[in-house]
Length: 85
Image 1 (cartoon, rainbow, N blue to C red):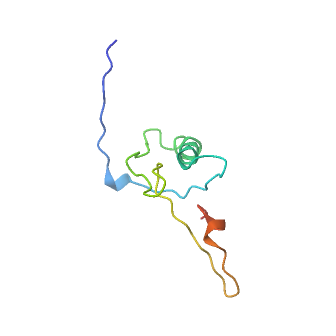
Image 2 (tube, helix red, strand yellow):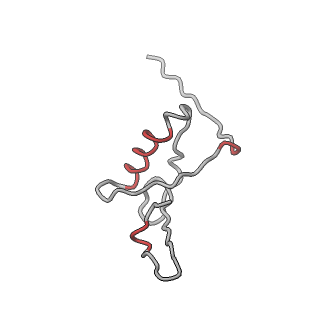
Image 3 (cartoon, rainbow, N blue to C red):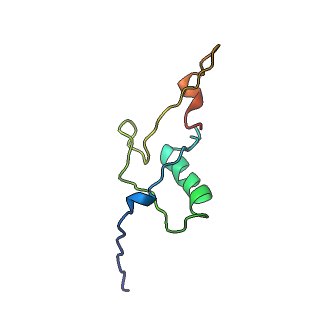
């Protein structure tokens, strides 16, 4: 069987980043992959996940960030807003 390896060169002009809501019942990598399959691939068939971008804390695909929203009267704890927009 002839298995040809094709390597693509990324076009930095087309690079995009997504905010992915994390699901506590899944690993971060599984959440990222599920989001990618459902929300990205249907619109950009030749898109891929750069698996070399891994979080230093958990070693999983994707860099995990936290967002804290605040208003004049209260602050939502960062842990509550993980992956939110």
